Image (cartoon, rainbow, N blue to C red; front, side, top):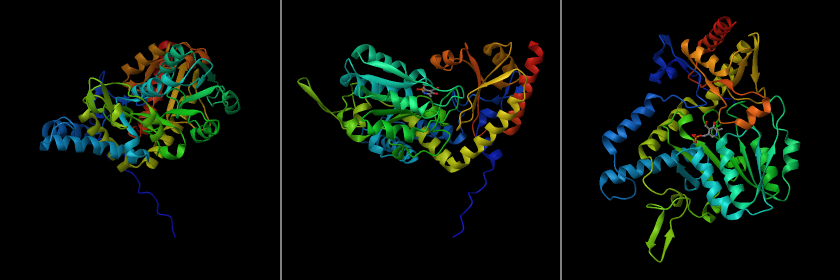
Length: 411
Ligand SMILES: Cc1ncc(COP(=O)(O)O)c(C=O)c1O
């Protein structure tokens, strides 16, 4: 049988779905290259949130009236959409405010009650602070220690060194699927298999993976997987934690309140099952309606097409930036997402980003919530251009031209 070619995507039409991308900044057309920080939103997502508030707004699971049922269905429908997007069971998906919340939930509910002096946690050098600080809090409170898996100069993990760290005292391994600074795509499936063979629980930070590649979380073999909705063209304040059912069911609640209980008496409370046990209080209902629309949107464009498009933009940008004298790129991993961290000789990252902004080009500068990685490279900060499928090749050229101009200004 002949293979059916994927239909070509009309990227100009896709871009036209993002109203903000038509605006000017400082009198120049906006070139938005900060999607690893937060992604722009298509009209389909904005309209879904608007429609919820205009026509369906009510609280979830608390009222028998029609609007209450509609709101509950919309919220639970979003959970089902997200579960199918990630290829996991909906009843294993805790909806929460984002990756930061998701990892803290594992830290407080899984790790704090279990870890003790003599235990160890392994993290990688490239983690975002959201996958470092919660474990430091756990370590301080339990007496466990943290060990760090190092990388090479290109930004790839040293896998032999990582596996050598996975000794019997290690109870948990936390690692990013994709680095927000270097773009390194870690071989999470291999790493989780090694950890599992040793009985180590794995927490994968999928913040920078979920927006950019088709995910089959069930096949990764991890125990927990965290995502954040606002990087997936969804609203801020949305995200999720996937966890293996038996682990979620064994964990005490993180927060107490309404919705997470089955029965409350002053003598004691019976908690709801997971995932509702971890969703105390009124959730960000409209936000999750928007996130449901976002995963519909990403699926309609096609994750394979998105990944291929971003690969092309990355290749173009890497070539254009590598040709600039005095520009150093941080992160040249074997497999890399569309993120380029860079510095230009003689320019501070913040000055560079400020001058690029005056040209309409939005890049992030700073430490990218990854201080240990900055220490590794011996720099105070970098600039980071991060691309999404709605960016264009003309925008890559605009970035390169703006850097050339800024270099001349600073010379
Ligand atoms: C790799 C990584 N992990 C975690 C986070 C935190 O996500 P949030 O602030 O949405 O919880 C980010 C956001 O920049 C990230 O890039």
